[in-house]
Image 1 (cartoon, helix red, strand yellow):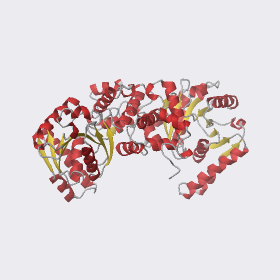
Image 2: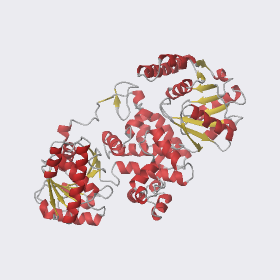
Image 3: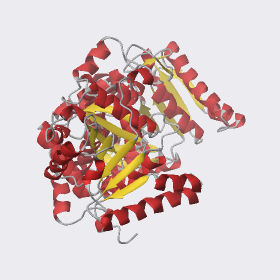
Image 4: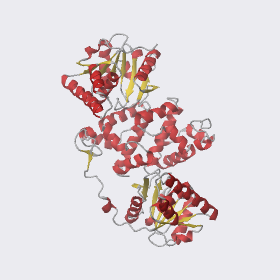
Length: 595
């Protein structure tokens, strides 16, 4: 039988601490909420009442339930008020010496059988526990912010935490309606270990002027379906908090350079640019604590001015016969462009025609497209098996196999066939655009247009400019994206561009975590979906993308950037060698033949 926790203490009533108080009180547990002073106590009380009042206003909590909730909370100054509780959760700032002092005092104050828990997100639970005479009763209970909403709790056991204590806390999480993942005491645990390397990498992109803050955030939201872009998320977390977590993970996690805080973070913290809570971080906010972003000196100029110099595009050529080419043909035809589809023969053209027609018919059936619009779109497409029919187009989009030699040969042919000033675009997701551009005598006219699959659905296009791409070509590419109803994000010609460069190292880190037997694929997926709001866990996503595709991209990133932390996980290489490629082969990280 799991222990019945009737009273709980919470130390520290900031946003997280007050949220934890609310979680327990909502579930019928009496709470003693403790702060260091009367002023701090009142601030904590205001956070709790503000949260519950908002829940009532939104119809998510009845007034009577709110009143009952608040009646279960007793506010007090000083740790002595916790002498009779069954469990204490500490939620004070992330400083090891502070937490150790609090735990030493809790050890003195609390009854011998009480469990002492820390909500730390990055510090060593073991180092905190040794400040007490009962390290076997110390455990990590890491809630995610906002605690009343987020369903995940990381239960962190040390090498000496009692199995009974772990079981009792797991049962408590279930009582609270939370999903727990139980893990050992390692820097960053699951979610932060995977999240903060990605966030740090995104800050590095911004610091190096590789892409704007808006484009980096839009790329990850629209390209990966994430709830927030990485820089907006840094502002929400707080740059000071992020710095402390990264610095701790760097020092405790084997000094992985990807966890060494990007210098810009420390500079911003020193300058008081802490994110939402200070009113300014990567973005500027209406006031401290507000989520409302307001324009500042870095806000992009109006789109009309930004697209000045764009060439007029009326006729588009698409080369290729695969899924991506088919989707791009449909996108341009639906947007009103005349399209010339070029494949390697009449049979290929017939297959592409049927695929486009089938997709458009589905749009009609679903009520997203009228029959007349479908017929008009099909009527705009001309089918060809020769590149010579691209002589009078204004833009060519290449979507052939992802092999550099094939693309270079194609662009050399386009250079001879197409009229001067035509924009030549490649949809490559990993190859250097400059290599393709230099196969022509017009590298200024070459740009990357990386559509995401499925092209008719995905709203993002990465516009990749090389060091030879002209400003007019970039402006034209952006204008075309806007005309297609897509969001174009501009970045430099570097392996992975924005999305893949940020996404695949995170996926690779998840594989390394599994490989080290730190956690299971299911728990890691749960952690990222429930703790970070990701639409898919890393192993679900890898099986969808294809492990061979992920390995190829990770190899490209490693070869170009030479970052040791980007080396493909051996487990990923072994699975690909064994033919376990994900859903398409029936088995990857999971067996899909039994589903």
